[in-house]
Image (cartoon, rainbow, N blue to C red; front, top):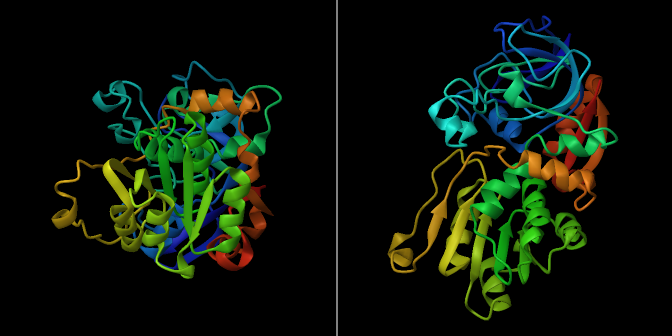
Length: 345
C-alpha cells in the first residue's frame, strides 16, 4: 500500500509499505477514505517528538471503512463507516477510568507516533471498540475528519481547560487550525470578547469570519500592548496558547488578567520562560493537556445538528499520490493560505 513515511528530521517520502495486519483480538484494520495533516506532523518532521522513531507512517486523523476486525471487537463489523480518533484508549486502565484517554497505559497518542498512522491506504486501529466512532448516516465525511483531532483539541485543551465563561474575555494566540477550532468552540459559552492574535493577515481575516470580535496583527506593533488596550488595561480572563513557541507562551503571560488562566495547547519543542517574578502574586492558573477526545460524542452531535461546521477549516484537497505537495502547501501556510488540507485515496 502507499503511505507517507517519516524518515528522520526533515525527511519524508511516499513509499510502498506492507498492508497492516491484525495483531491483537481487539484490533481493526480500516481502509482510509479521508485523512489530513496536523501541525504535530510538522513538529515530528522538525525532530520535536522523540517518541516518533523513523521509519514511521505519519498521521493520526481520518475517516474510513472497516476492512477487518479481530475476534474481540464487538461494536463494529467490516463495512462500517467510522471516525478514527487521534487518541487510542483501552477503556479499562487507571487513566482511562479517569477519562484521561491520552495517557492510556496501552494507547494514548500512538497513531503516527509510536505505531503506524493514517496517512496511508490502510491503518491498524488498536482497541477498536473504544477508539473508533460510528459515522452517523448523512453526516459530511470531510467535516468529520476535523473531529479526529483539531476540534476536540481546541475545545478540551483550550476552551475547557481555559475555563471560558459567559461574558469573559478570551485571547487566542495563533489563528491556525487549532486556534480557529478553539475560536469556533469558545462561542458555545458566549464570551463577551474573543481576540485572535497572529502574524498572518489572511488567518486573521478568516478568524473574523469565524466569529472573532477583535484581531491583533503581531507585525503591526507590540501585540501585548494592543491586547491590553482592547481590555482597558486589565488583560484577558483566558489566554489560549495555540502555536507552541516560546514567544507566544510569553505573550500569554503578558496579557493574562489577575485571576485568569493560561491554557497551553501548542506542542513545544524547546523550553519557554515562566516569569514568576511577575506572576507569583497574580492568582493565575496555567494548564497543559494532551487531548483526551472525551468530547468527541458531544462534538459529533453538534456537527450533526448544524450548530458548527468544521468543514470551513478545509482550504485545500489532494489525493494520496500528491501528499508531498500537500505537506509543502500546509507547511507554507503564510503564502498558500492553507488551514487544513484534506487527503483522499
